[in-house]
Image 1 (spheres, rainbow, N blue to C red):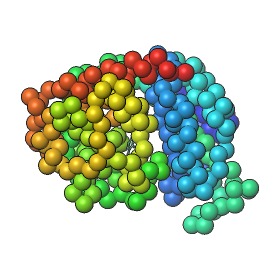
Image 2 (image 1 turned 180 degrees about the vertical axis):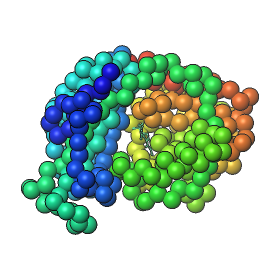
Image 3 (image 1 turned 90 degrees about the horizontal axis):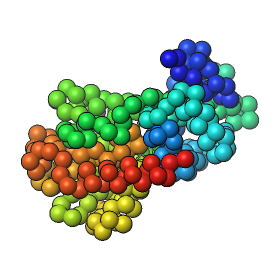
Image 4 (image 1 turned 60 degrees about the horizontal axis):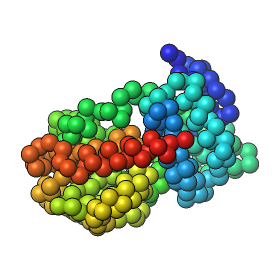
Length: 287
Ligand code: PDD
């Protein structure tokens, strides 16, 4: 089935959708994005993603080219026409395409922003076999820029990190800065010690995950202790459990870090329970 995508106000077959070669997203990575998951044909935490999008745009002095209500309509229409039961809606907004390449930002009055949305169909996303098996991560140095709280489309280093993991026979990489784990290449990182969940506190060093916020809330409601603080790879290698969160993986157990097996090498007690709670609650609240 040819996907229907959205480009600047139009719904088009993916083969007919076009963006200018002068688009600043293409030339300068001058754009932001969001990924919202779809469960049961409905959007998970749309509000959270819309609020973060607004913040990312504001931090880069970009306006909001589309209202939250219209954005919701576009998300829903793409889910409907592409018949997505489980999957993702990807959204990207750039500073647009001026007449020529220039480092200076174009005048927003004459250069409209580019708005692109497309869906990814992922049947079986919630009932993922990977979640039952758990994943392996390696650690790499975090050499990204200093505003990781803004969800920009500068995804080269995360891509390189995933390739380094693949080459090492692992599934993903956790990044470290000054010896402490920042986050995964496209997810937030956690370790578990006893009944305590430990994850880095929010700052400009990491993306403020929408899944993170929900999972920490559910953990506290389930009487689990949450500690927001730095941790090292050495501490992680000796933890009882570890996991990641993101809109595309929900809660995913980690069973190996830099070759060290956690527990008995299978997902423990806390991460699978949090995944279950997260999925149940998200499906209930999806719109
Ligand atoms: N990635 N940290 C980074 C660096 C991310 O790229 C992401 C999301 C997260 C988790 O954020 P959230 O829970 O809001 O998805 C943390 C998306 C899924 C991606 O790039 O595909």
